[in-house]
Image 1 (tube, rainbow, N blue to C red):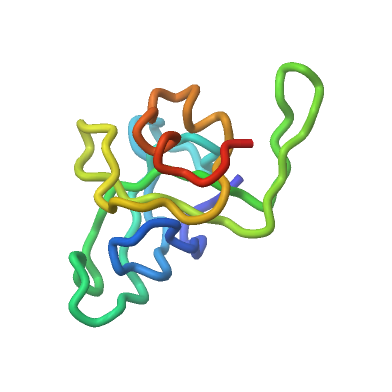
Image 2 (cartoon, rainbow, N blue to C red):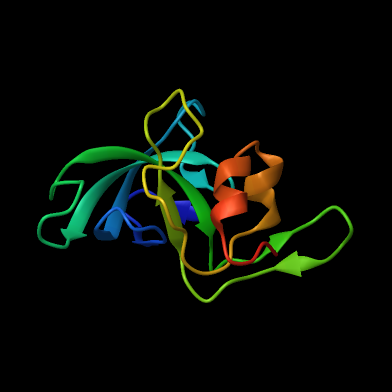
Length: 124
């Protein structure tokens, strides 16, 4: 569960290290976002000569959260950090980077982001 102005690690190789959440797409005026949701972020910490520039507004999907998420089978999933993956655009479900670092939640694959799930090291 993330709210506006939350800082997230970026789990791909686009060159962005930290991103700040500034909006939740297609959800009205909701204040919280969960695993597998598309959000709007701004790049806060970027390595030099990256694909993305500092301060650029991007679309991303949440792949890990510290707040536990209850699944339909009664189990819970929780990660060590809050992380997202940068997307190409609002319409496409393809990642901008070519590698995904660390594990991702199964909810990402269930949301239809199969390319991200296939690039990830592990899907929990």
